Length: 218
Image (cartoon, rainbow, N blue to C red; front, side, top):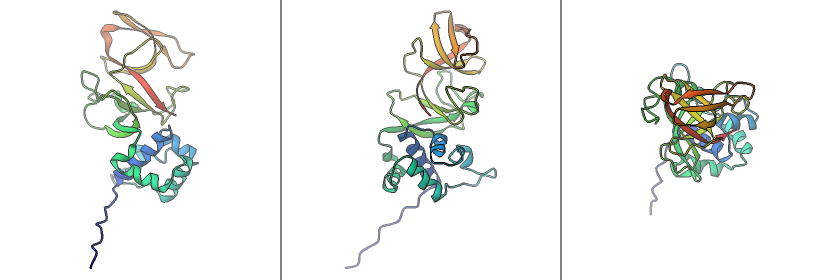
């Protein structure tokens, strides 16, 4: 009897990077945080490093994957499972965009939901909000609470309460991250993440939408 060999499935660039994103999320880290823990350059797994300036796909090295697995206390078998869509286990994919890009026109629709080009996906902890999305922090403008490479999970459908960290988008298109101090029919009173900065008030008529930050990978 002649046995037919199983057809080998080729791994894709997107599958490998998605598995690394899921590995980081399972460890409670951003891709940048996973790279740091693995002793690699913090930008090793950043999205900007996945495609070259001339559009060619850049793959992670076997050495960097091995170090990431050791840092996350994971095996190569578990990594293989993460390559499949069902491998996320305790997470699911949500839209992801860089914080700087999120402030540009067309990144959100009128309801504050992801819209337009530039969005990718990342596996993050489960949320009941089917409209949840993620933003990747760039730079140190939100330090010390959020640093470069951190990812925040934002829920447009979650109730917003006093003391919550929120993302607020003005009708002028400006995106702000702050702590909600008070909300009335006329205004939002916001407290900056940097305690050295002064609190400020935004008129309700100037607010396009406000959404609660549920989780952050750090």
